[in-house]
Image (cartoon, rainbow, N blue to C red; front, side):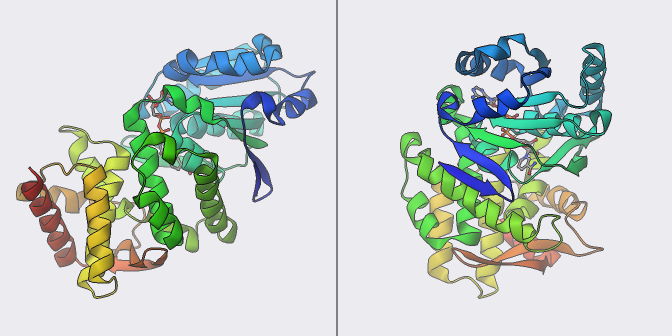
Length: 357
Ligand SMILES: NC(=O)c1ccc[n+]([C@@H]2O[C@H](COP(=O)([O-])OP(=O)(O)OC[C@H]3O[C@@H](n4cnc5c(N)ncnc54)[C@H](O)[C@@H]3O)[C@@H](O)[C@H]2O)c1
């Protein structure tokens, strides 16, 4: 399956059946660098080398695992190694990994010698349906996520679902949260399909991955620089960011889990404003809280979560922006939240958790 993503080819196929061989052939006289993290080195590199034995000659750049390493310190080390390897502007970088590798590897490629060609080979569900798409590269600075980055397009993106065989179950849930987000903001029929899925095999079909990619493509194409409609993709992330930040220094919860709780909270606000119907809200709450268990959120945490939400880079001035869901498949950007609404939604999450435990 092939899809044109704003001029960038995205292919869903086992690597050996994809057109990646033809693309590599264009670089046959140039050096190649494969960027991996420790996990994708162990779980994914062999599959890539098996599909393209000529890549045995490539330099392999090994990153430490984890979001905390999506940092300038690591980028600096990679830049230095690229200099040591005498990598030139017409060489090729292959990013083999989840969103951490595609974001950081894309950033390295976008900046080294003012820009090298690169391709993404996403290996996590999150990267296949979201992080590798849309040409955003980035790294974190201090604790601010994606504080520095570029909009730079890869030459191509190759999605081989075989890589998901080794992906830990929790990481599947992270990707699922983003797929459900795409469905809720853009495609009610896709939401109807996803809400009925209860196992990984039913979820990670080429058709579903393609649908998620198409939905993200349609938003990004209409707003490549994120000045308007692309903000729809922030659904669940206003509360999600606050909740994730609060739990960071306590018992951390995954990004996808925080986004799922954020989607419940933001749908709750829409329901309280009589924008989202009681039936639609009840269903969204039921589906998401069934899949993503509710962690206890004590009332003492509300102020801290609010404070993280106030500092969110998505805000404009003093406004705390969020995406207002009208129905599954329809949403509006640039709505703003009152602090009272935030308090009520957090109280609601906290009561849901008490009822569930
Ligand atoms: N650029 C964008 O538009 C965009 C969009 C969404 C998210 N992101 C970024 O993506 C990142 C999150 O992506 P992620 O969830 O993929 O995180 P990740 O890259 O940290 O991967 C999650 C974990 O899965 C492991 N892993 C990946 N593929 C594997 C495989 N096939 N087998 C075994 N283990 C594997 C990784 O080593 C890691 O431990 C964040 O940094 C986020 O900011 C970027």
